Length: 315
Image: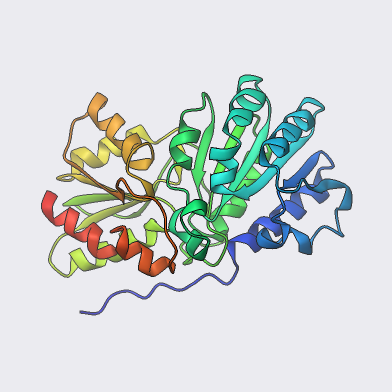
């Protein structure tokens, strides 16, 4: 069986972040980048000399950093806040919720090393709950970037939109999915492949696993629709319902706990608007651990083979 070849991107996700932040900051003096002792990890140490008055290393004080971002927002600045995803959400949650969202302020949060992409940083640094936490914040927008093209586009988009925005990402190289001229609309998913038998709805690094699963299923005569649901809140209800009507069931695929994330969001839409068979691929009642990403995908059953197995059950 010959499967399609998927190529790695030419630019790391962290470089895409740093380059885009530099571009935004140069064009708008109100853009302020904040980090919590991770500028070298996300690549902004390479650009700090070009925008020295618009980049601040707050040290290992994530709650303080978010509170500082709230202060900047109150003065009309547009803060872009980065740290690892578990610190950006779990550790600084009260500041995000009260100082940011409750106060109706303007913050752009980048949570990196999402899920199993934290690799050797291990269980304490491996967030499987960050999307769930951010979905609970009223009026927050929640994205998960699939490749560097998408990440750059989303950063520019949220810069122009007021409110709390969370973008989840990996730091290193992703598989390239999109051309440079692609656009990404808030509240809409991307149809990457069309099939009549089953729908695979994925986000982040699981998008490529869903595409590979569709290849496996195609070899067995099963046609799969593949959706990149990069905007998890607000989610594309219309697309989910259409896919539920057009295929025999839906499999959600996420590098996150099956509770609270993409799987839960899709389940909520289906249960309230169009009940349909659903399987959720994701982390189930487990904490993170040390390991390479490909190994951890197998441990947590996040691989293309796991997705294809769930799809076969539905078909």
